[in-house]
Image (cartoon, rainbow, N blue to C red; front, side, top):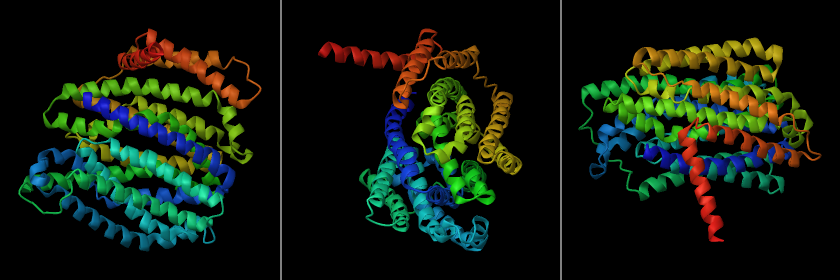
Length: 496
């Protein structure tokens, strides 16, 4: 667990710095200086490129995490694993190009021939390449037990690039079309930086070595890759399908409103992203040695810690929901319940811990694929049902309902196959603490200025919720973290 804690701490710092930069960009700058349609086209380019990039990995990311421990040997350049990785990725990108040109007419027709997205659809080609390369290099880097560099680049540096680029647009250095071009180029810069880092660490080698690619291992890698491809594609589809489907029912402008308000709901999920950077590698190694106790420990701890963090962040956002719309322009109020449903969805996700990772790296990894396919189908059907009735809030509610069903299915599967039972009375107590905290803070009269109101309510949530969690010893890991911060604060006070 030591490696997880160290990597998680560093990644969390990078993520939160990136969140601060991203908040300035997405919540303050974009809504003020870009139109809803311009925000929408940025989101659609990111959505389509992410889906295509995931498909172009051909599922080899999952095989990398699972099988790299068998190739790991720096003196022998990991038996040519990086060469194998590059060959698979290049094949996947060529396949993407063929698919893209086949479905491009449909994509343009679906979005509208005169839409801003149709005008810039060609940017998907380089954007997908850069996204694909970064994803696969980051997976390779994480397999080398380094989850922090990818977090630094993807969560912090990339957002800093975007913020600088948008200010150049605001200052009329270039037009919006040029901004989109530089937006894509900035992704390529991240790929170059990650490549230079791996080269500096001596982890790049294009020398082929097929000595460890036995027939049995090749079959195992192929099987896992095929299922990981479907699973990974499904994962990205789940994340991006809502904005794509909103564009089918409505316009670029509604997509822009949805994505901007969706961002606030995703803040709840931030603490889990750092854990998921390193946990898959640890779980894969535990399964390699058939150490189910380690897997069970990671599973249980992930559900408790993430539920605490998720409730805390959700409280901070929803208690200040009226203040959020003091920041955003009036046209964004249609997304109020997007924030609610997305926030609740992410609490449910976090309460499930790393259940999907455990299934994915167990002998039952195929089940993840079946669940993912059912999830995508459920999401598409519920979107078709709710979008015409509820507008953009329907897409968020569809996501919430599907996540609840999927997490219930994963829980019962892991219980049936491994006997894992991560939930205790502590989980219920966390929810009670969150509800009581909300009930107390919501009674506080609003301050005259919304910024002061945010500060007052934020401080109250922090004091009430954190104190209740700490003194009840609901999560010993969080208690240790709080005590560490308190010790540092005392040392700092004593120094002065």
